[in-house]
Length: 479
Image (tube, one colour):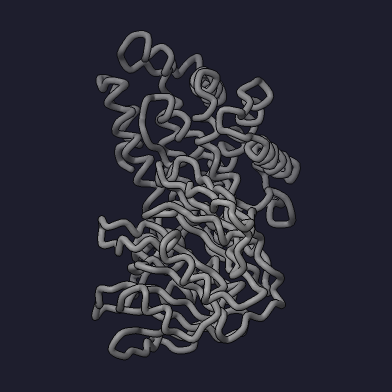
């Protein structure tokens, strides 16, 4: 973050150089997990406050510059200190990004799209604690504006549909001013560290951080950068996606970043989970899956967390197949034990193993579950005594260690036989390789996650053991 703090001290630096330096800081700040080391040993997470503070350092560096004049003069032009207060500088910054958004509205949608995947900005958790700098009504106004942004995003059929009118940017201006007040609170000590890590305060800071990263992302997209924090910043996962006995946040940004670092979750999956569960909402918490209700993921590697999160409302057995055998156990257990509603009974976790698999037992909502990491050809699933309730599949081409087996088409008729009669199996797949055969699907949805894993499309729905095709009619074409 030294680059952000030093930016204003380097007037001889070109505008392009400054944008490049700060863009690197911006992207790093959205991917890093921040910890504080204890003097006595061990460490504690300082998320999400630290990335929010760093992003404001960066934003402060950006709005000191007159970007319209800098582009016209092909050099770095700062706003004059004597004539421009902070609010006037921020207003000029918003005018610059607005000019770009009018020309390319999809970038405005892209920048703030992460706000779609948090819970609606309403309820007790949004109520700020008033102090000498921020009133309750100002906090209410901020979250009301965030809700307006969420509604604008929800109403867009395509990213280019988002309005770039005065009303939209008035909302952005009001939110930016409130973020500035929060920054003053933190920097001037109106809030103690204990207060900022209180559960609801922490959730509010996550929203402040997502909004601010959206604003800076829009600037970098306007400056010609191909990627920005909005493309990969994690969004918290809530009980609306994974119902637990305690409603609210199930996984926070910190835990998601940790899972990504341990390679048990992919970047962008927090948004994939949110989008999937809006299309296929999970059942009520009192539903109890049978002891054979199973999830199957062929050629999974150690990509465990997202399928587990999606499958927990439906399954007690989780079959992850990976032909290669590793002596090292995947780093999933300590991630699981920090998820609301999950209990791993032993510490350290006890993996059970035989010649072809490793197993880990845990509980969710008080019901026993088992993770099977199977080291054999994917087709060994046909020898298991199970009831297929969830099928998850992605990235299984011949490249990058994939099997090249066409589970979504050629092998699908055999897979369907694992579904109990008069029942169905939920699926989420990218259809690679071979495309998705929908002959056995009672419903199919395109699950687009814009700007994440560009070029990859997902499909979800339900498979049934009974074909829905009429006699003599061709099956639906693979997408």
